[in-house]
Image (cartoon, rainbow over all chains, first blue to last red; front, side, top):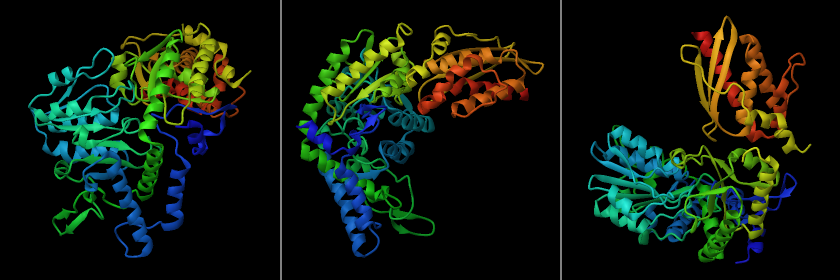
Length: 408
Length: 145
């Protein structure tokens, strides 16, 4: 895999920020888009913008083909059984809420349990917390190991026959650990519970095969995998999705509308009320094409090498604390330097053109568990290079110099 | 002076390392305002004692970056002993300063002037204004009581 060649496809990377070449290490928040994706969206608006599933005119058919083609592309990308199991959403957050509102809130009762961890992104935490609160179900947490990871032993100790939903992330957006989904699915299913997986940070860094993982739901966002913002995916097994009620009522999601009741269209459209995110789906399909052309295995290998290099370099820095497992991290490293606040650190790095994330990463319960108010996070993607890791390490050293002994 | 050095002037780091008026007042003595920046985790707990139209005492506890904590330290120092109107005027002037605007010459900002460099860092303005928002909220509460 030739990273230099790949970088050519990303127009945004070739600029200076504050007088320095941009080093973009905030991919966990959102990734950059290759020209292929930008042009696919552009082309749709320029050439065949039209609503889908409605008109019987030529542009309408082209738009419908492209939109449904994108669904089929996603199906094959995650190896779902059929494209009816692929629902387009606004992103990960709306996918979680679709299931929390359309299923959890309708079926759970006191005594039932929702099992999760305190290391979830707020998007995979609050919808379940509120569903538990609304239904009287118990909200339970799988205890984390010392480094924040999830062990199967801990899962076994927490999931019971009362557990109806296990909601967990594939990859933590703070700890960078990869959760053993397949094994957790087995445990959940032994107890008759459904497994809901937040794949927002999983899809960008792993080849996903939902049939192999055997999870009941897998949700993710397009913009964290080189696609546009505003498009995400809710995958669900057909027999499970059939049991989820639509949350948004309106046009195109209906079968028959009577005066006092209505019936819904079949999967997946019953969840796609209103004009769907057509341009977003087309952009996401272009992103999948782009990633598959490079090869997901090549991307994984590149990232693995880059992460190992970054960990090795960063561990050399005096006063740098890395949170989560010290090896095998998927795409991101979360840390603090001396007692420097992550904001102060991030501002210094930004003055050298280096973009990282600083704050609580939408994971307040986890920050409290780590006993830090905030952390800094460098997150990587296929276009990042070892030179950029060097720039980060150099920037961290300069931050230490700049603040002198203020924070030590 | 680079804009980074302009942001982190010595007087700011001094307030960060040696915060003035750190602490809290007893409930009987004053009111308390708790504010945070939910996106970044900065938090402040400001105790205010308002008496006879004056800010008789101001103390703070909090957690956050050097800009948010030094701003809180400077704010408490600046408003102590001022009338409520003067304190609100200062808060308004500070908000103008953060927007990079010229401010009223007659107002002596003292150490606070050192925070003027923040205006060039849009992402950090909310760090600097947190304590001042707590002050404004506290004064509103005091007036209602």
